[in-house]
Length: 173
Ligand SMILES: Cc1cc2nc3c(=O)[nH]c(=O)nc-3n(C[C@H](O)[C@H](O)[C@H](O)COP(=O)(O)O)c2cc1C
Image 1: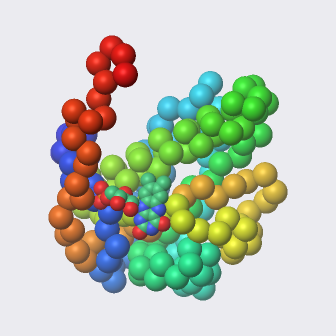
Image 2: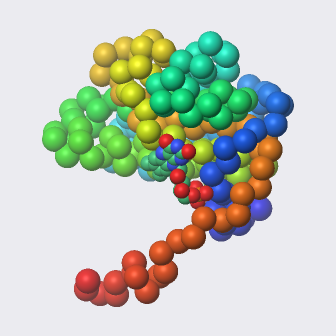
């Protein structure tokens, strides 16, 4: 499958079959994450791959009851360490680059998941403190996204997009 196919195939999946993922399958996702670009190649990311039922339930609680998260074979929590960016780029590194870098890593994971026949969903609505506590994150490591990943148990229709004519400006706004 070519990259454009994976882009078109990826859709948010919120129902999963009760089938696990091997360590190799998880490693493949993280390998693709760490190929993402990052400002100055500072790579501020870290990943927690959660399979433990109890920890998953705590992540559901942190996300205010998004129960489908616990049904995924693995929940990859993408974290950022802003200090890695701020050391070189100051405020812009700490408030912008560290989030852009990890967002690129998230998208790589989701596209690779789609390429490999897996479903995933980007979860951004959660209490960071609760998630940090559930995962035992050290100070300075911020959870920025959760990605439940598993074999899909649904094939949702593509969600609509704003048309190109509305979002694309040529040469000037
Ligand atoms: C930053 C961000 C946060 C999101 N948070 C959630 C979330 O908390 N729960 C959820 O079910 N979906 C979440 N989504 C998924 C979006 O709802 C979804 O990507 C959007 O509706 C477009 O649908 P599609 O992914 O199927 O193309 C989030 C997506 C992004 C990029």
